[in-house]
Image 1: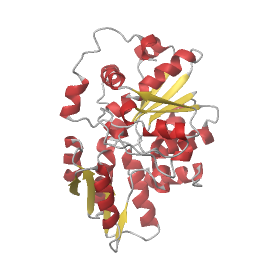
Image 2 (image 1 turned 90 degrees about the horizontal axis):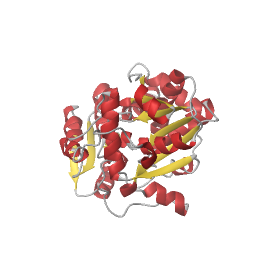
Image 3 (image 1 turned 90 degrees about the vertical axis):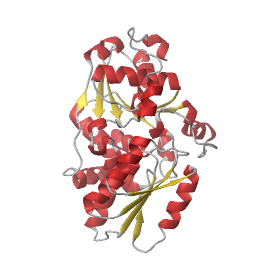
Image 4 (image 1 turned 180 degrees about the horizontal axis):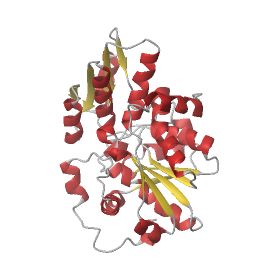
Length: 333
């Protein structure tokens, strides 16, 4: 297992604090009343590039700069927010960047990636993109910034929970979505150091449940096809060798169906008056299950990981209007 520690996450925070926004904690008094718990939302949808991914990308490059090892070219493989984060970070440091992605990349994320000045290369599948980036990384002076399976990325993502815990002061549970596991790994390390009694709870789409399969089998399982889920930020093909051992240490893990993802995307956008990604809202299915069984009056932190939603996804999210009556909490288990 990687030796990454809370000290690495604290060092990452010092590295990025003048570049990356310290996003606020938000809450809804109405939601708190419905659940009988206090739910604090870390609003990374207000972050630079609209997602937490800028934390890991910035920490990765800032550490290289500190060691005098700045690359001539940066490459990355992503069909989501990591693409934008790397493109934005590369522009910040004046380094050319190329992003390798599958053709099903969200149009809004593709456009944003290119707007930051990165070259975007598209492939028929995620595996094809992954193979291409590996070849490109062999070029002299080129550095590959992976989306989650790297110590510097994990440390950077861990700063999200670090800030949330510092600002909240206390929490009984912390929730985050699971794609490749970088955010959840950083969150787990941070929570175990700062709030050792708090539960750390993950969730992923039922239609992209490689992590759940991996937890069942005890080894990393890979999805056989590209998943079709609203929670595109969690549609990674598999966990990483670094992240999987930490995902195995989570207190609870939930698989969330597409109706629940759409349901809570609508409600969080309505209650918080924020543009929230389905991947972020997915965690609410786990929050509700926890709230029902936990003693009343506890506090939970939910990491709202991003706010980049394509027009196509918005149409799917709002095919049915779930706001016509208050949530029936007991039916959300």
